[in-house]
Image (tube, rainbow, N blue to C red; front, side, top):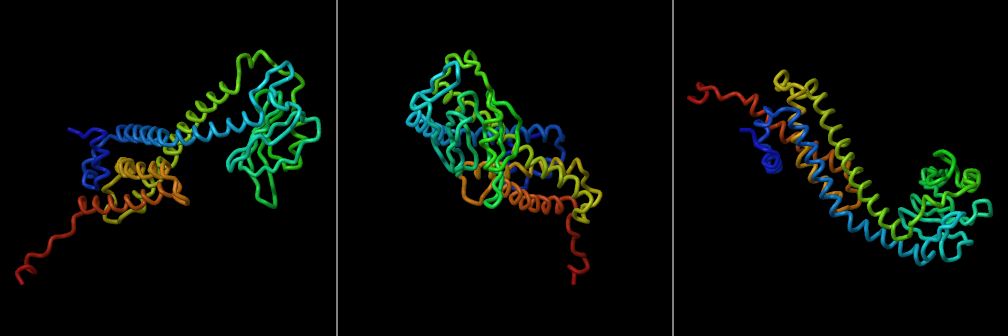
Amino acid sequence: MKPGFFKILIECCKGPGIYFQLLRQSPLTALSHFLLLSLLCTLVAALFNFPESRVGINGAFDQIRKSCGDIVITDHGIFPKKQPEESRLVFSKDQLELNYIADPAGTLPDFDYNSQMGIFWLPRGIVFWKYMGQDNDKKYWLIPALGINGKNTMVAKDDIPGYLRDNYPAKFEKKQWAGVSLDTIQSTVKIGLAIWSFVGVFFMYIIQFLLLILMISAIFPLIGSIRLKGKLSFRDYFVLCVYIAFPCMIIAMLSLIVKVQYVTFDRVAIITFAIYFMIVMTRIERWLVPPPKPDESELGD
C-alpha cells in the first residue's frame, strides 16, 4: 500500500529513508502532492502575514482620515472632505505613499517620491507609480486606473505632471461610485491585498520549485553520477525531486514568516534544495549501486 500525502511529508522531513520507496510513485501523483503542499504552505504564510498587513492598512487609512477626513463624491469627482482644493502628500511609508492632486492642470507640488511605489489620487481617477531607476537616472512606471486615460508608460520624474495633465478625463461617472465611502474602500483594499498576496505566494512556489525540479530532472540523467547512468530516467528524477522539495518548501515558508534580512525566499529555496538533493542522491546511489563486497580471500588473510 502506497503512503498518503501526510505520511510522505513527515517521512521526507525526517530524512532520506523513504525516497527509494517513492521511486515507484506516479509522476502525476507526485505533482498533485506538490501542488497540495504549495497550497498549504501559501495558506500558512498568508495566515501569519495578514495580521501585519492589516495593521499597515489600518495605519495608512488612519493617516488618510487625519489628512482628508472622509471622501466626498460629486459630479466633478472624488474629493477629500478636508481642504479639497489643496494638493498634498497624504502619507509616505517605505513601500508606499499617497499623493492627492486637486487639479492636474495647475502647478503640482514637488513631491519627494521617497517610497518604492505610490498612488496619485486625482478627483477623476488614480495613477499608480513604481520607482524603476537608479539615483542618477530616475524613472517611474506609471499605471493609469479608474477613468484615467493613457497607457502604462515609463517616464522621468519631470515628465510626470505632463502625463497627468494629458491623460486627465474631462468627465466623471458619479453613479459608478454610489455608496462608496472610505470604510468600504478600506475593506476592499484588505480583501484585495489578501487575495493578491495569496495568489502571488502560491505562484512563487510553483515557479521557483517547479523550475528547480524540471531543470534538475532534465540535466542529471545526462551529467549526473556515472554510477547511476542508465539506472534513473527523467521520470525517476522528476518524482525524486518533487519529494526532495518538500522539506525545502516548508523551510522557505518559514523564511516568509520570520523575515530575516538577506534571507529571501529564492535563496532559501535554492540552497536547501541543493543540499537535500545531494543527501538524497547519495543514499539512492548506495541503494542502487552498493559498494563491492570485500574479497573473501582477502578476509581470510
